[in-house]
Image 1 (cartoon, rainbow, N blue to C red):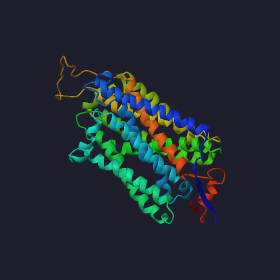
Image 2: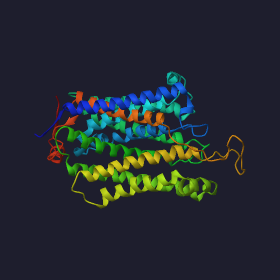
Image 3: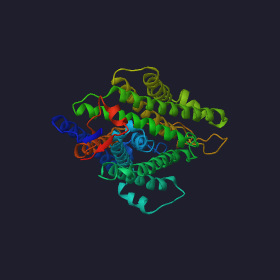
Image 4: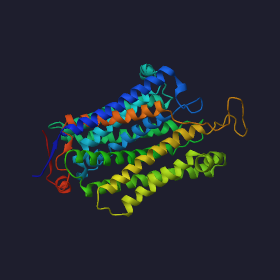
Length: 407
């Protein structure tokens, strides 16, 4: 009988150095949050029109990616793809870490984080924000439970039902996050039902891309070489999700172009909006979608660096997409009176200028560092990584008589 054995990541000077560096970035994030709390809104690039800045870009990206990071575990448990089962523990841990990092940024960007208790005890169920309190905490609890049943002795039979519930819940989670924008009718760039499936596709693409890079990094850190065939397979799976994102983005913009009232918005985002068309066409579509698709679907690579490069480009393109969606959607002026031009000394009807400040970027990077620290502590303290993740991975995982070797 073939076995899949798990182990902790062995620590060393390199591990401690990386952990210390991430701790410094986390400290930068906390210092940035303190600066914005102490000095107020004036130290940020935000104003009365752009009220969700760079921290929200980081937070939404991390939260959306958390849902997609669980995809590898779902494919293994829910859809019985044995090749992915040895990586399910790492997938669940990464989902927990990304959600914790994203929520930390979100809470510290509220301005009054101590008032979070109000949002958690007083609910307006006509607001999608109230729903997301339950969606986020529920997903976190399910991911933890999923990890426990996968690691616990004698609990393996619960992995599939718990994984199925987590799979359905993460679809609800990403639908809720997309609906924050899709139901915001005051903003022309947001008000669209396609936002929900678009965010689901984004989560699958971003989460899989992060998982590819993390998996390769942890295998190298354990003194082994990543299995090229495994990374290529994950890269192709990521490519399918990237193609789905491109499809929904095309549907969104073609729908807006078909409606005459959105012509100004589309010109702004796609043609004459300054940095936003540049980010959209060059980074989001070009570097973040077309190039990765060519690398993982059209070319048959024989090196682990190719799917890793594609994953890195998808992450860069994902940040650009979230930035264009959140910041660009706010920069375009509100239509206060449909069919009429409105102008005043306040700036109604004018394009908002926004440049992220250092405290905003510092807070966002602190959330990313927190997520990575959670992963490193998890793989160091728990038996998360399969020992046979190279070479014979495909035979061991896919063997009909394979079983898990518990500690």
